[in-house]
Image (tube, rainbow, N blue to C red; front, side, top):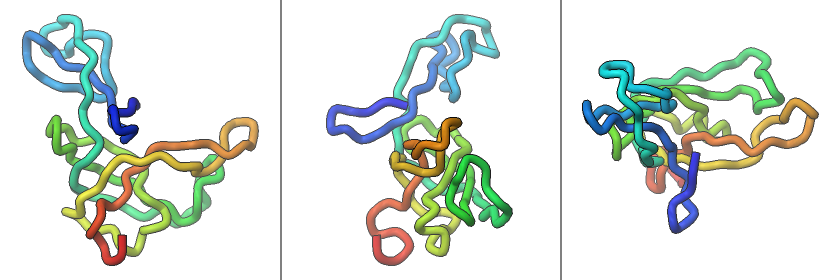
Length: 129
């Protein structure tokens, strides 16, 4: 994950200069032609393709319940899997616009608060944003 000039988080993946395909996470070589990949920003906004709410005890001190889902990234067109905003579970819907964010969610391996990336609803989505 990286940040753009305005400080907004975005995913960093790879692009094959020969095939023109994007990948996340970035493999060392293109799975199609075995050529080296260039680092590329994949963007940080997209649309929820599908999601589920997990209601069993979460790992790493994540909030309970929490949601995970697939997001279709606007810039690259890739579908990525990630954590969704645990504070807005009731507002999540397939087709909702989301943007990548970071915030303290859960704990690290030492039991300390840990900043994690997640997709939060974009302004105007799911009621009050």
